[in-house]
Length: 254
Image: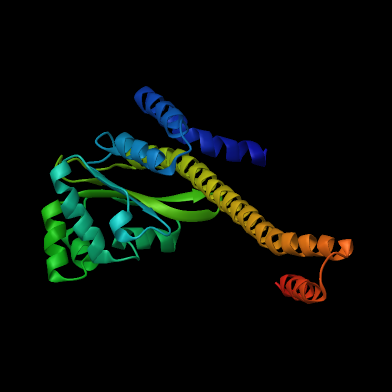
């Protein structure tokens, strides 16, 4: 019975979802799993989120520098502004991302207060940039596989003036679960491809080394074998025999 209860806890949010949301999640799952290329997967995720679920979004992934963090905005002209804000936070990520990492659960701010921006800002200039972005509502959902968390997705409403509700958080969490699986698969594939390339490079280096050594060995051996044949014939003068022995010894040392 306990197993049945857990199953129903997982299914219940889907039962509450609208038909449009269910169709969106099915489409999202197919799209995200259609490629094992990490950058392609992240690009597809951006297109799924903006503008349907957010005016702008940020995908924080462990190991990504601030200038490489995937972002999208409904207004492409505001992408430089969004990137400047991310750079202001530095490698640790945004204020809300750090909150989610510490708590290990999603964050929903239906109406973003001015105090939140002031607490998140690193400097007065940073605060001015965030005010230009005009966020009014926020969702931050952890990216995790089982108990392993490796980032988060920030969904934000700004220019549209819309505000998130608990039902939006359920949809965002369902999408993020699918995104986490797709990103994890793409990262594992990229890692295996890198390891395979390294192994192939090592094999090529070894083959080149063996070929070089083989050539270097053949060169002195040819001289040795040639002089040994002449010595066996007994046709060499005493002076030439001494020269032959010197050549053999020198090439043997080589």
